[in-house]
Amino acid sequence: MEQLAKEGYEARDRDFNTRLDVKDRVLDYLESAFGPDTAQRMIASGFPIYPYSVAFKKAGEPRIFTVTLDPSGLLLGWSCGFEDDDEGDSLDLEHARTIALRAISDRLGMDTTTLAIKAASTKILDKRQDHYFTWERYLSFQPELREEMSVHLAGSRIASASRALIVPPAEARASRVKSAPRDALTAIGYALIAAGSVIAFLFFLNRLNDRDVLLGRVLAMAAVAFACLAGADLLRPSGYFLDWDPLQPKGISYAGTAVWNMAGYLQLMILLLAFIGAGDAIDRREGSGRGESLWALCRGRLSDAKVAAASMRGFLIGLCCGGVLTLSISTIRWLTQGSVSIQPRGFFFYGINSTSPTFSILLFFLFVALTEELGYRFFGGAWLMKKTGNKFIAIALPAVIYGLAHTPFDFLPPAEPFWGRAVALTLVSCVWGWAFLRFDALTVILSHYTADLFIFNWPRLGSGRPELIAAAVATVAVPLLPAALLLIRTMSGGRHTRRIAVQPREGGHS
Image (tube, rainbow, N blue to C red; front, side, top):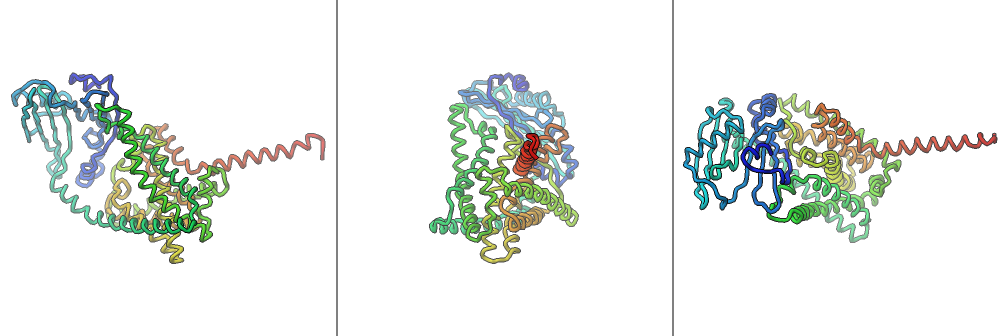
């Protein structure tokens, strides 16, 4: 608000929302060309890599104000939307250039003597003239790194000013070429998922026709998954705020965005419904009982002995998966001189940009664990076991597909080599496949849930702030809740039993 006030704009009576982002391509280039230590120093120095964007809007007014800051609060830029019919001055190019350079010097704190002009243009409107300027400066010649400053003047007022790091065009092209093998692995993984989805859907329809599907509990489980995803979405209002056109009623805009999002989620639920129904039909027909504890939990029986056992097993196996992931990544890095990327990226922002990071993380990654394990293991592993009778195939094939499908997720380690993610996650997925066949579906779901909660709470665990660390530890421990409830109930029952046993002796009976 202070920066906007300096430019003559009042933002105090406006709604606002803050969002953290990351410039992935820039960060990738910095890490590969300069190394992670230098990239970290550049982030700490205030370069535009992890920008916070604060948007200000007011119902009925078309003009949107935005201020961009680095995580320490250093100003990186701002913008104040102007309409083409807003009145303003008609300055000559040199006068406009002087105002723009003063803004870069006074507001962004840049040394303008190091800047080289790259572009200057004028747009003549009915009621004013707009001017656009771009300057650059070299931060490094070898490896090459440039910073760009852009300024837009609406008449004599600064409509926008921003800083950006520029990835050299040759490096950008090389990155696109390099991504081809990664994309190929991903395509193979997705093709296999698509094939498995068709098999699951046809199997589900066949069993539904034979009345071999308990549709009520299948729908209930799909509804739980949908509620988790929808809840995580509603806890991230920044997307809703950005979609809001202030010339439209805010409530209608938010409702429209929610309906659009939920419609997309329902498409996922149809596929998940097929996985759950098909997996449940196989489980009951084969008599393996791997779904019993899952359905008990779905009915709200948190302290059920089978649910509690799955809770404890899942948590411990989830921690073991963390060890498998760490060991495999360390081995791959040692063999290939690979690297781990700077975080946060990708799904980390589900918590960071949420109104309640803890609940957002809990809901979103419960959805992820349910969806992936009900697909890869509850249907995929069970179906392969039914068809082949071979445990190795039932464990390994879903694990390989899982690893291939996660190849493009660069927020997961390692960053390099790209195929390292597929290998590491395939190994972890083999542990989940073994846990499913050895124990049950709930064990592997809670194991996956525990591993994800640990990974995506890492920024809070490593923050050094006691309150954030405590919140992260409590979040990671959530899969232990059924086991803790059973323990409490058992201890309470034990005390009650002892008290009843003592009472007769108090009455004088032997």
